[in-house]
Length: 420
Ligand code: HAM
Image 1: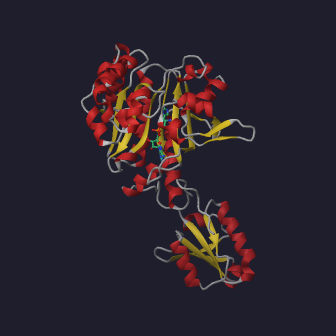
Image 2: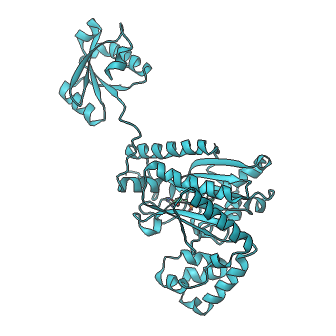
């Protein structure tokens, strides 16, 4: 029986690797320009990291974590997101002693979700966490970086949504106001939202059930209940975004799926993706999280971008992942087995010159070999038979117009650079 990869996971190869490399490389260039350095955390953590970090009443902790006991009975969890592990690492290695600290990661995440296009059980994120700055300046810089990542990739019609979810001073009184407003209609909420009403009322704003949407449509929003500190902070962030010429919309009912957020939250969405998984990236401030993990008070902010979803949309919108003109490369065609040694010597010469090349591992008809080379993205062929081996002169053929050049490779090793 054939064994396939588990539901919600995928093998990544071919074209998808080119897209993925393009996304990661262009983000890494930006991370460097913005002075971020890389962190790699383990693929699994003590379950407590996520229970405490993300929040017990969130969907992720309640329903979506891959949690298992190890052989000694300790509870471990495959990371469903990158922020809580980075916070754990910041405290474990006392990285907060040298704040501000700017870290980025490119990692796979695991969530037990209902798989569909752009929603996987194992997926890849690239993200940043900037710890130790209270100023709205870092909010603006982090959002700027997120917007630039997509601009660099060639996206044009994305929407950047921002909001503030307040702080420990203004959120609890707002939640009381919100609950009072909803109270007469609690029984009309969907079963999930009835539970959210008691455990995590703000998540009702993220419910996709239409009747819940209608109930909360005119409800009071946290945006109008922010304390003066949070209002000032948010005003400063939006005014800095304006001075950076970043277009954004304030979405007063924007909420996010983690309990750790305070003040600024944001998401970048595409209206070309179906609404359930239209978010390409998102993040926000988490000023209390490091403290809640037992560290000192270190206000922080970050975001993550879904790489798989970004690939889906790039393909859908025909955005190319080719950075430069296609590089030149050579397919070496052997005419007879006895020249294999000579062929390998020629491959070694090409590779030393940084030229991607391959060789025909079986002796077949020339026409078939040339066809294969064309189909597999080679730009040139070089044919090796008795004449070439004895004269040392190899004919290099450019496939797009069949232009031929003679290469006396041992006598004039640099000539290949003029030919390709
Ligand atoms: P998140 O919004 O859960 O945030 O995930 C960020 C991005 O990961 C989403 O916008 C989406 O593109 C992608 N993503 C999420 N779930 C899936 C899935 N099942 N399949 C494919 N892609 C998915 C976070 O994870 C926070 N840790 C971001 C953050 C960093 N906040 C502060 N710092």
